[in-house]
Image (cartoon, rainbow, N blue to C red; front, side, top):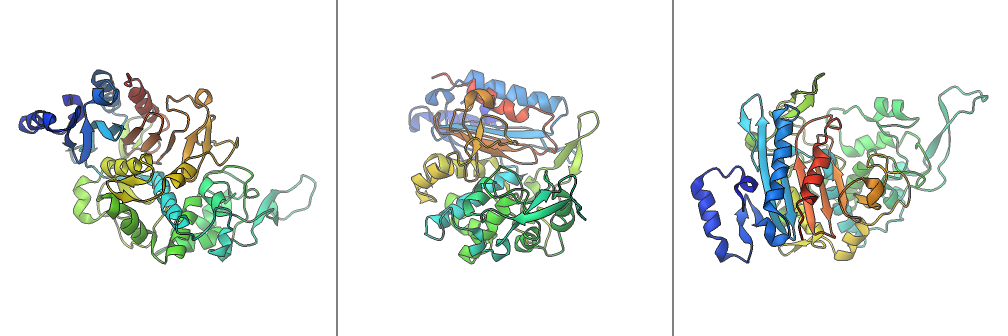
Length: 435
């Protein structure tokens, strides 16, 4: 494997040993690279020379001081062909980025929580069209906020009407329940006042009881709208299983898959690998937003709030293992998490032609994933049927079953939409396919 795809293994002896061992592996394979199965790019139909472009593009963002550092991973046919750590994990401390750096993955928690719930589906605990009120009675008999007609006397900004149908598990998994949220909708001010503030010792269950007091923004199933729905998913896991989401994920997913660095709250013993969080200043250059210290909300106690919508920290290696399991049809290294047909169900489009505003045109939504449905409008080289999601701190991943391809980007900057780092990862990956 070319030296550019093995950054971080600086010792010549390590590199020489890795190259010398190639003959002992399957054709094109190389020894594990920082804990992931590796291969020469050419062995899986990709170009080493073209993959070098990925590092050059990412280094440009670092050189322009637009991001502090990145970890990028590309895998095809179960083999990692690119795993690069560039820039700095913590600029203020002068700490270089490493392959095992730990990142706030935010909404990339959502697919993991969704898989957890579908594991219970496979145990016969529910059907997708079951009302969530069977387990969370606070969501029974929901009301919908209706804007006041211009000539109607009204004391508030809206009136309410009974929801046309119950909120189902499928609505929650596909973000079509109509829940009040922080992004948009007539109930946004009430959400910010009643739901969003985190109380001392708060739990997701407590937050959801507050959320259920607010009317919906639309009748369940009518539209797609992003929000706290996957917190409901995580809470359903807790109620159905009798465990905290933290315990369920650890025992049923992380330990079987060997995801040793994925946590809701980072142990202080691992702070030396935690990446700092940055934000752009007025000139678009990075400035510190949160230092990687024990005071971070991803470390500090109390450890009572386990958010399926966005609470995890993880590494590129761990996240690769999770999604290689999905690409394999629910199994990795002998650990079966889901059945193949359940993976197919999760990664199908469940939302028809409803607009997925956060992804844009050409996308639908499955059970925890956005899905590419039309290559032209999507403007992405990812194949139709690819599924993906990203996190609020700049991270992103995708899985492309047609090409047997996984891409992962880990960075820590918010907001990030002024940069093309995330789409550039896809462009630089797909242009390297040569078979």
